[in-house]
Image (cartoon, rainbow, N blue to C red; front, top):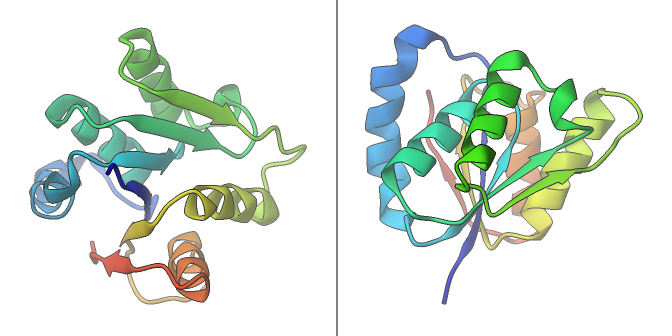
Amino acid sequence: MIRNITITGTRAVGTNDSDGLNSLFNDYLAPFATAHFYIGGAAGIDTAALDWLADNTSAPLTIVVPSTIADQPESASSAIVSWHARNRLTKVIELTAPALDTSAYHARNRYMVDRSEFVIGFPRGTSQTSGTWYTLNYASDQGKPRLVVPV
């Protein structure tokens, strides 16, 4: 049986973080490589996880954006378009929120968690006000298991 897993994480990662992220993904995503992953279409962990999963696994990948792909940061939209052109994405879901605000990102995160049995979060810090912690706490409220991997 294939599992559905949501990936959530900080946007605060830089190009210098790639080796460390690859190591974390090898340790914490590779064991689930046969799952179906829901990934937000933001910069940071979302894009890094998308690139790693697309390059290193044959897992089905669904990208969910709060509005449209064109509304995402350039690094994120370029990655989505590139992997989609290579037929590496199972699905791209644009939720068409009228504005990119906190409520739109929370709706996107709930959409992914509601369709998953497990959530893997890559937060930076412990601030419960971040979108990553919002998503992890929402999964907890739904009784879903979470794996928290600090970056």
